[in-house]
Length: 319
Ligand SMILES: [Zn+2]
Image (tube, rainbow, N blue to C red; front, side, top):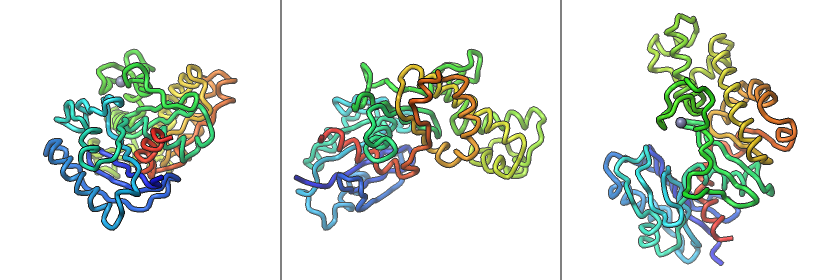
């Protein structure tokens, strides 16, 4: 049995390819900028060259399969990509077929949130559990659901859109076209926007100096580091973020009753500040027995989840 797998992670800004054992041990890794503006053919050529480079000195017979993680929407059965917002021009690209034709190995494609859920379940805090939810928290908020020991995709690959539950009826506009979604309140850009609006409303904060008075330079990272050194406004913004986050996760606990909710990027880097308000909010919004049954944690794979996510896709299909 071929022991090794190749994972491909296609992001809006970078491409990553990883050679790993089935245990999740990463053997080699290569990266390149995506340069999505050059269109899908050019990106695929760069990607295939990266895989060739990764394979130098490695026998193809040692490779069992490919897992490919990519922004949705996509059809996971056919492996066709349908215009993800971060990959302009990728309309109806048969990604699975292209990878299989190029390398003669089976390939499976999943959206990045589903892939993250598989990684947390196979290699992270979700090992050995049956009901695991992974929530992305970065540029957007997405989710992947492993239920009863299987990835749950829904009827047409739309399950797990945790970021688009409405929390505030007249809240901020969301990228999806609705208002007041969890994503429009707690994503990185949403956190930055709430801080910027508070400054424009006349609130004082040391954040102003950090961005040289230019609100367009505020990032969620800057808000968290100002909060960490005690800036009062930024503490309030982070507390409010935890309040919304706990509310959104509380809804998920009440509906799905999982054993674990693992949260990505922003929670990985800011859990020290985010945990107290999130827990307080969870106690208000989740039913006690649902809360008792669930661990709510930052992703235990941290920033390496991207590498393992694509590997976990291949693994999930091979077993
Ligand atoms: Zn939305």
